[in-house]
Length: 449
Image 1 (cartoon, one colour):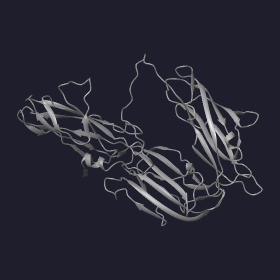
Image 2 (cartoon, helix red, strand yellow; image 1 turned 30 degrees about the horizontal axis):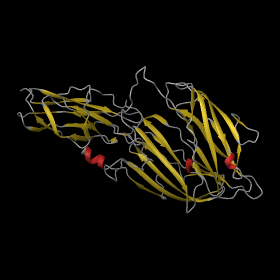
Image 3 (cartoon, helix red, strand yellow; image 1 turned 90 degrees about the vertical axis):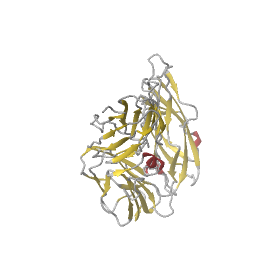
Image 4 (cartoon, one colour; image 1 turned 135 degrees about the vertical axis):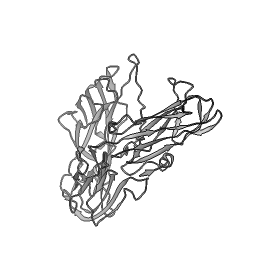
């Protein structure tokens, strides 16, 4: 069992760096638009900012490397079709050569092509697979740029145009190892207690041998890293107390990886899905050993999302207090996660729940917990105070958080009843809490005998 102040937890911060940068996202920040309110849309180009190509060997041709491009737009209330991506590679002269895919029509010089991307989604996917190789005679360090423009049919005005100069790719000729790991398929409906094998194979697509490689791994709280390698060090999930509910692993392997070769870890890497697992992530990345620099870091790290067939039960408990007019009383409520699962928003860093507290009639809050704010809106009764309180980005099983509000009794109202409601939230799904009966509670001031 654990009991912790919500203010103390949040001041410790999110698990930044544990699974990559946390993306700031507002909780419930969407605004409904009236049917007659004008809507907007915007077309965007998705292209890597940097791309490395390996220098051509003496007397031979350099290997081609794939460059994934695509279009997407913002507003799914509009259907957007006939995407046309214009790719200008004239800036690669003497640096790199391009092989155009079938859905691109180049000009006679082969330096500018219009690529048909078809229907434009609101979530980006690769629609154009360009192939790029270092030009013959291009030296290490040579650099050129690819420029883009795009338009599509649809949106509020019938045509969408991507902002000018919104995307550009700098192509650099390099030499060295280029390690990568393939993307895993997300796994869902996994029973707690299941053992999983991580698909972990390292491939060198560079032109030089990697003399050893380093691995970093992060497992969220509901996953146990079962396999232990002597080349690795392990910490967590509880070594850092309440601050880092994750397992961290760093490894150094001395296996050489030749150009074009793939290697596996010394033995398969197994994870155990624990009894408190729910929405889990296993992140892992690889880098060449020694002082070598990887040519292209875009495929060095992967995230494996694992969803367990489990639930968590978020509950709030109220209280009853008494006092005379002018008295200040502690009218606290408490949050508890009854489990069996933990819930953690390790991707967004959002709170796992927001708790609304409507004060009892005739009272005013004189002291408010650090993680609570005045949330009065025009729809509220002006005579009733309204506060919104946030939880940390995670809630372990049996986590208890107390919210000790100090209330001044302005006037005595028999059975003055305040209302507390917890709103669970998860990056993945908020349906993890099937028991809604204990998601609300009462705070009563001067209850009748």
